[in-house]
Image (cartoon, rainbow, N blue to C red; front, side, top):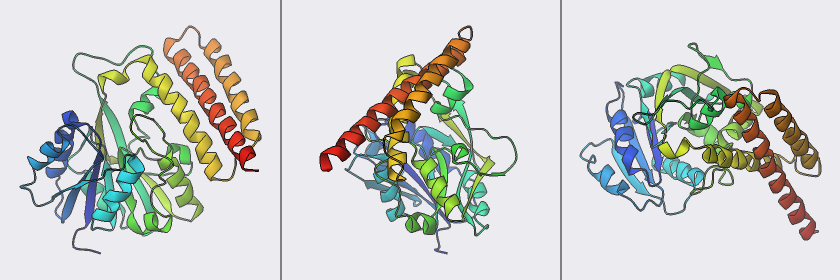
Length: 309
């Protein structure tokens, strides 16, 4: 093990409003060992660098600028700069509990553990409560993640820890070639599913993935995300992400059109079933809309393959 026992990494892009609180939550960690904090400025044009420099008197804090926009790119840069064998990723608009690093670090005493993450609660904007039309399922798109109060070893990739509260063993990350830059957000597009893919790869290779409830993080909900249009856009990109993930896994082809069409119809049918429940009705409509994104990406993939032949 290196002298630094765990590296906390924040990848940030134009979030100076929240970034200071995220860094401060790491500087306050109740962890007896040695740790570092790496902030990867992913092409920000706001006060990000200034926010970090205000705190660089602390020897634990490192700043690196990554000009190529993309969350997976920034995550890989953070891993390269970090010096420990355990990499803990915190979102730039989240706040970690005081024992976050401690809980994550000791979990990796299990030599089979590749990935671990914890519970995520939501911090609503001042004066705003959860909208009536927001279902628990859609709240997960805001980062909410709660599998209970006991440690769970994940068996289904769909239950994978959220990227905003996420840790990974360096040797596993290197084994799979890093975070896939074809998945993960790039600027304002909402590509996702990189954590789901990582869990699939870990389980396939005999590693373990854990949910650690005591590794608690609170996630700020930006006011602009409490619009129905944001969730529809998020659903669209989720559909595209799922299509890309299947293509990367060698599951592309005409069958995607059938799968997407069936899911689209199922989403509309369930929206009608829940017509009297505004939260569940909207949840199913977002799902159906996401399938249009999926089908669009599938058609583009088929056309691209046809043009190459």
